[in-house]
Image 1 (cartoon, rainbow, N blue to C red):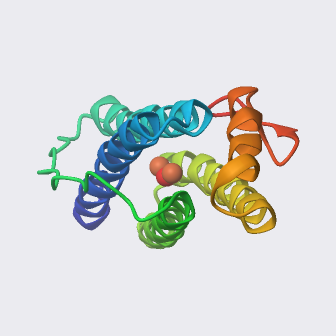
Image 2: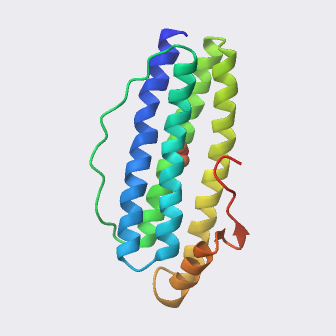
Length: 172
Ligand code: FEO
């Protein structure tokens, strides 16, 4: 594998692991704030991020390349509000989308077909993830960030839905 591409993929692992860790911390905070639907949704997002990191690692190992695991920063323990938390998730996903796009450029430059195919999956995944978080933010804008409205959104998430649409299982 082209050394620059290998270094870029290894560097990208940090973003995926950080999202895994931060989303887990978010899930805990939501749980402690009596929002089981949000907490469960966030836990699923956290698990997905770990799966993303693993997908990159597996790709490197299959190609006899060495994955280098990053140090992961300690995540926050609380958030100002649910909207602030979901906005942070949205920002994080936009950052990952940009990073995946940069990886695509590396893979194109290296004419690395297997990496291009792997990254294509991530391009589609990011469209889905950003879309889902945007829908959730839209819901919160409509109902507000407290009281009955928030409980309604929490209940939707408990039923596996965001803004009335079923959440797609990871990787589909
Ligand atoms: Fe792995 Fe949500 O980006």
